[in-house]
Image 1 (spheres, rainbow, N blue to C red):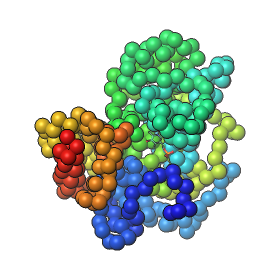
Image 2: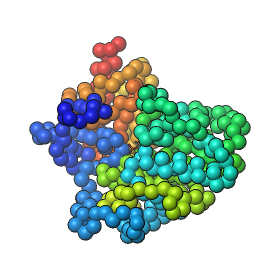
Image 3: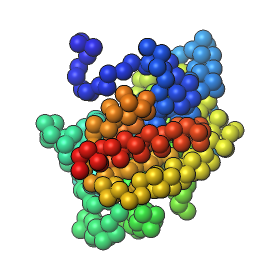
Image 4: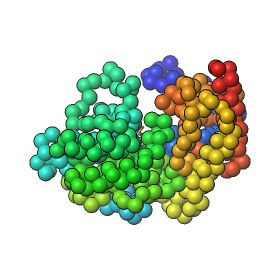
Length: 394
Ligand SMILES: *Cc1c(COP(=O)(O)O)cnc(C)c1O
């Protein structure tokens, strides 16, 4: 611990094993996981299909590099593009890398049509990752402090703001892309207004810009569809994925459609590890499992609605609870004050793993396999924690 860079202030617990929605610490205590490694272990911990695929692939072939054809990568590219209705896939190792690829693709798209200073529209309150382009695109000023200068070529508008969307295209003639999360996750679980997303789609089409959805958190069943854009009746040009794609094995992807699929050529972008056989075996196991067992994604809608409705009942009359919102199994409970200490209270007093984001919003990202009995335990525990917190901090 003392030799680790202190980039995280870690909670005082070490997990030794997990199964489904349960985790055990190295003293044998059991915890209910309602954060899934931050929307990563959507199928639950150590899902047998993923574990088996990783073990078998590790015995056969781990890595060859992208200098050669990779069968598993081609299979995963086929599976993901077919499931998404997209054309092409690029594989990398994380969400920030997937967004980095999308930003580079958008800039190249602009340069190819003669724009010297391509501009990408991004949102206030957004999160896209920690590398420099993704950090520039991110709308959380706190995590940018000390890392300037940011990159040129970005313009920011408020989320869900129709007027601002219209205006930004009126004010700029060099917009090559709009990058947006269908539900802002780190920003406090804020679902986008579907009519605003449709407007962004229209504006992008009318101005020959790419609509790029950051589905790093919303993808892979989290919101009740395999991809959150499937709640809408149009396709984005670019979709970025990571978190849930390997159920814990690091893998990211960028999917492209139509004109966006024609931008990158050999030499334009690359990665040593991205899309290696082991990572793609994990991704294939995830996508096959979600396809073969539709009840997992159905549960995201069913259990997500149930959890939101139960919290609405349990927390009724508490004036400190501002709003309960979400989509599928992305759920936010916003209080009228900051409450970061609730994470530790939940862990140590209730053996519940939850998260607080934007300071005042309890974020729940349970695995898609969570049962109603487990959800009831979660709802009872979190409701009690919120009630006690609001009473003692009145
Ligand atoms: C987590 C997240 C990222 C960054 O992913 P990393 O794998 O941590 O780089 C990007 N975008 C969104 C929406 C995320 O939730």
